[in-house]
Image 1 (cartoon, rainbow, N blue to C red):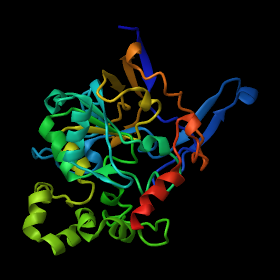
Image 2 (cartoon, rainbow, N blue to C red; image 1 turned 30 degrees about the vertical axis):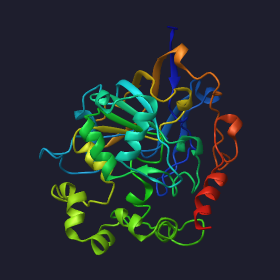
Image 3 (tube, helix red, strand yellow; image 1 turned 90 degrees about the horizontal axis):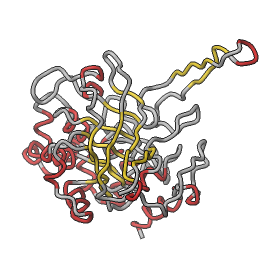
Image 4 (cartoon, helix red, strand yellow; image 1 turned 180 degrees about the vertical axis):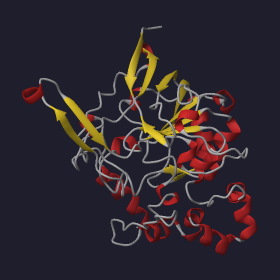
Length: 337
């Protein structure tokens, strides 16, 4: 075996970093400069859920499933986001909802038994990290998980899930769609709300999984309770970020916007995953540096080092380890033809 090396799995942070649709732009200012004060001292103001970051249970719920008050960042174990890890590569179409079936298939494809995941960190490679940009492709139309995936992680007893997408949940399970107190139901590329676009592309029944009242209308209250009832029983809105809540409510923490050189780690490869949030008293989450420590011989050396072009220039840069958001969206909307 080769030497142990470190692989960065973090998107670079800066004032122009892509951010969630209604998050504030990071403000980076100088308190001192070399010319004026002889030292460089900087100040950063931003939402802590910007770029690669960790979520704590308190971010999305008041109570966990065992009845305790949902824990803040400082109440989680110091190694909550760190441990032995494996990459699962998810094969899914654009804007697809990742379910337990996709996770089972990903395990089978790389020779990992789900029983091996107990107490481990699971890093999901959906390919979305290659689209990281201030774009509809990355935010509106990301692939993402839902309630079945959340329950699957709980069933396997995983320790942490690190997702290479805009959030642990599919965008239509978030306030970008018709969920949450700040629901936006954003306009999509066609000028229609993204909820209407999804119905046109995937059908009303598929969309209903993202909308409590549509699900009940189409499938009935009993069917809704079977799928989301455990969440409703602890006082949360079932279709609003259900994977977050299934995981965090059972003490499984999450990392969002995993990136960097994730593609250098082949699916099914085991390694040490290091991720430490700030020791923030009563924090709801924290930006963090995610790094893999892995045997050098296991790295895919055909994958180039990831380079970043921020500020709306991330499209069409595959030579830098990115992907074309335009091609991704064209593939998505070709479903209508």
